[in-house]
Figure (cartoon, rainbow, N blue to C red):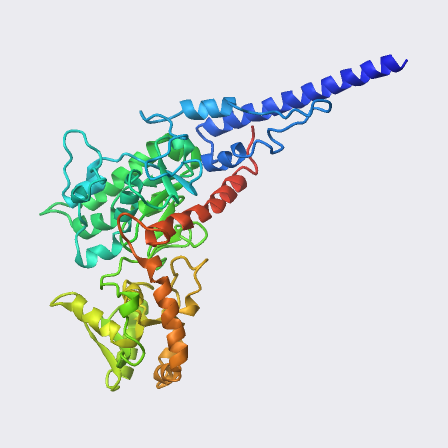
Length: 480
């Protein structure tokens, strides 16, 4: 009798184990079909989270006696992912570059489209030999330079693209370029949209269509034709549009993507918002002060400094009000200024000689003036009610900036009384913190740990949770 019961139990256990394995195989096969269906909306990054955890309930089913897990050492899903590469490149999931960065260990895996040079370095005048798509950035002398002046302040796409190309140079391993889109967390679109707007937004001669508009239309056409865009709906694509007027037409058609922006001043909430998009610092124009040689409280003889455009439209009308309130004060420098006639150098000298630098809203909530002040170690006084600040989810700007509501700032006597009331020890505390945080607002090549480039990649990695949320919400009523 006992022998019969034991055999029955073994048969029961065998059947249970077999059913569990069959169910798991069915789930894996279903996921594979869902991922590669043309109308799928789930980014590969979501699946990678599952694949990275073989002990999850999806893949691990213990059989009672043996306790042997279902181990997907090379699942059909992974094989399909590798074979589904839409480029001629080989899969690179196990490749480490010479700087010691491992794609498996990187915080963010980025696939970059091979757009023709006319969309990126060709706009800088670079012409590759033959069919070269990218310049050889491993050699400093061959890196195309970006035009200076005000063009430089919106050069963010240039620095991010250089960083992805520099896999053989010692740099932070936060973001790693992969050559297979199925391995990527996000997909980067290397279109120098700000430079395109600055250089080519006017139709040539008597033409009716500008080169900037043509390039935007072609980017839209390219993306919508890509399998990567179709499979995710674009939510895992990163597009840099830092100049407020860049991508003016294309942004509406690509609104599901993650934008890297200066602010949301000229965007509707449905197109851009803080939940899915990234606010990046301007590239400051004035020279960064050495922290060890930064003028102290007593060496900064100007209390308040502002130099720039005074008569602005929209929210910038507050500049006019403050100009009339402050222009005659003895310890205040408030005047018109531009980059012409050594304007940048004069602004740098003025900021490093001032205790406080006014940042006032202009045509848009943000400008590079804030980052010029930071690089000059001049305590920023921010009067811009709608401003969004870079990296604010991890940086507490109240430690090194002063925020004053616009309605208070325009009250006669309020602003100066407030600033004069700040004691020297309070100022020194903010000044020291400002010098510590200046590194987060530097663009450079090669990038350095926690500089602007590295910080932007970190923010993008943190935004992935929104991508996953959107994918899951989209699948609520999805039929198999």
